[in-house]
Amino acid sequence: MTRDDLFNINAGIVKSLCTAIAKYCPNALVNMISNPVNSTVPIAAEVFKKAGTYDEKKLFGVTTLDVVRAKTFYAGKAKVPVEEVNVPVVGGHAGITILPLFSQATPKANLPDEDIKALTKRTQDGGTEVVEAKAGKGSATLSMAYAGALFADACLKGLNGVPDVVECSFVQSSITELPFFASKVKLGKNGVDEVFGLGPLSDYEKQGLESLIPELKASIEKGIKFANQS
Image (cartoon, rainbow, N blue to C red; front, top):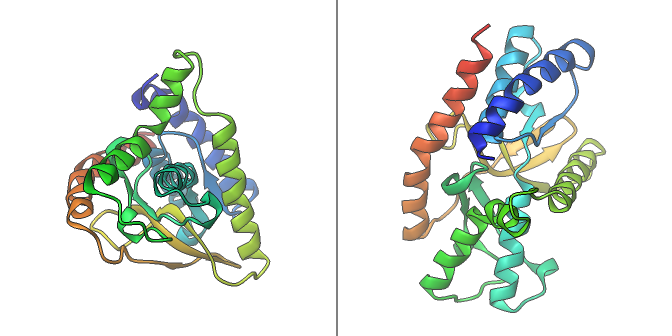
């Protein structure tokens, strides 16, 4: 099943659910995990705008699984404990729109360029790898549940006033020309407290950023168009 197939199935479901959210719990933090996140988050935003309940600080696309994968693959290659690793993942939540910033990974490991490219590719193709391993009979389930729980827990920490809770998420953003973009965000009592910039990028990451923009833009516009069809 492609992400286009998922769009055809999930877009209407997301629209209906968000209509209900706007009516019955308009102040909730909404964690969007339904794929394609690059399109379903814009759908949600448009529904909330129409209902007069949109708060950009309270809508999140959950991209945590990309971070979990990037950290896991990096830890294996760098031979460090995964619990000590941090890797920002920016952009979107599908294919080449997923951009792990291994140049900013900690602890620092001087991996050769070919390893960085391979780690990036594997992070981007992580979902496909699982589908192929299951012979097309399923996709990432336990890992997605784990990632969703991690992000929900981070949101709860923010709501409870725990300081310096920072996670990557696909949110309304002005750090690129696109209206939505995944980057590190600080979570607080009102949802997003701060959206962080990209920081210094390697030449390879700059190329990746340039390459992902058109595809991510198209996915965002597809979601907006769908939400406004009726």
